[in-house]
Image (cartoon, rainbow, N blue to C red):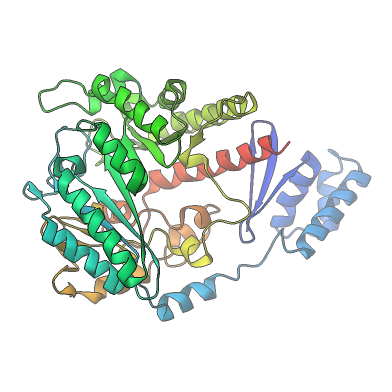
Length: 452
């Protein structure tokens, strides 16, 4: 499978199955398009004779043949058979937990899927005993895997800060006993952030996610306190201090853009201008009836914004003012293993969410939906059929993914988004797909531009 696109003056050819990227001239670009249609060489020569010289065309065709023989152009799909074999035979182990340390929040974000932290249920804080059992469950379910991850999530985790610290201490004690290594992470809105929290996180947390939507008016509109007052002025100075204290590494400022700020590239650049080096701003996923939801007619504008952002990132990088944008980060030489490229984040198999009372769900976005309740930290997995359902979910079991050029970069997309829009995890959220494809194109173009 071949994907071709032009962006920012570059002619780019992506060989989907090998992952090879070629930046080519016009003659090769046009020749590849006809070769993809299985057009014989003599017909290609005839078709393009009015545009290019015969010498240039023959040289282009020879170059394409050489690349094909090297396995980096028109390569075969060797993964489809492997996908079904891996899904059936692969023994999964749990390697990561999202601990819902607090089903409560001190903000009232308007797009929150967790309903101000309550997740379709009641306000609650996870106690130490439940958290301890969750870590024990993770260790017992992780098999021979040494490296384990625990994300402290909410709601707002800092509303249950002492339990966070106690569980980190317990995890460190268990590392030595079970030959495991915990990587702890934390997501916070910053309201309760202080020097003591920063110091502890810098010592113990492998990554922190700092929730901030963008420019002051954008952030305060969507992330106010329950009183309606904005939170930007309170948290931005603390987030800047936190990011600097971590050497501008091992963190992300993470925002959500909505229909209210389709010019979101300005929010990304606002973060960069403030001094943040690790930035993530992603589209809201919301029911179509919500006034702030992204709609199909918004896609062209959003794609323009991604193009604008990509060009500005190249300019700043060349000026020595570069920053990372999470959704443009792409590894063209390494990256995840083949199975992960086909099946995604591991929700429901390798990654589970734990509620404050110890219930297990496939991920945080399924919490509170009883049809996805998998078990609890006392009994373990009591509904293994849910694991099987997720295990058999990959880019070859989703019709929308099979012929998509971005399938090995998004790995089939978010199962929760698929379920919430289509009632099944074996589908894909269409608007998300369109935007993902655009982000992949921009990411590849940036690599090409910076390789010059």
